Length: 297
Ligand SMILES: [Zn+2]
Image (cartoon, rainbow, N blue to C red; front, side):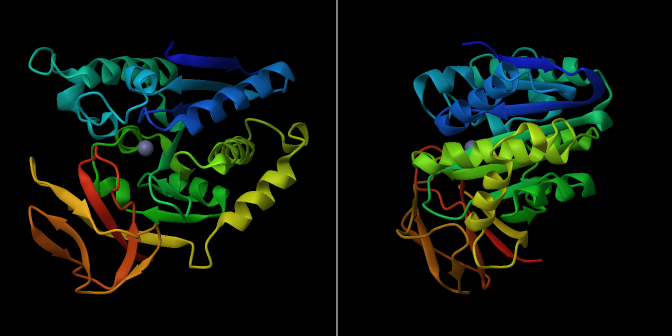
């Protein structure tokens, strides 16, 4: 498996659009969706403004269909991990991190302001697709294109993510969480999200996407009947080595009450400290954050 899924050079120069999928190796709907999108653009000779490069995230984890091999590749984006030579050699993801980083650095060649990163994911819980913009205005504007709920201030609190790392350098960057890992519709949601974003960014003209209106309506119907704009209030970080078990039944964007028992960690109840809204409850074995609490902006 190659790092570069495809790179399509535009007829006109413009932005660098970087599409990433499978930064978590068990999120195969995104990997399939992005392959389809790139094939569609290439096979139909759709004129492009700027360049579009699609990249595989964690190649070894994609092959094994696991979230990660040694460490979560989307929690390693710090100068320390990227530039240190020795002490991390036994962590497989450091190799992926360095390769992916140099690929993105080469594409952007220092001009991050002219670079957009679309990072596609899926999740374990059963409802509520959403977007996570990096912490700058252009990214927040871009997140609105998906027309579903979006959560601000998440990446600035979760500093080790890819989008935050490159947003800090000046890129526009957004994560789109397209649905449950194995749900049939997730791949379609991600394809729709990619087309809407590339159109909004001016990389492709919507007239070349026959299903454009359908995709737009489809994602509109996926938005929950809630305010669209949320911001992060709390991340539950699981302490190293602790046994964490989320209580059953939580889904994205479920209302929760102050004092509600959300999970058990090393035998102790974890209660919500706020009235708020649940995001990304952890129901898979691998993961470092138990859940997130967000509130309406
Ligand atoms: Zn993910």
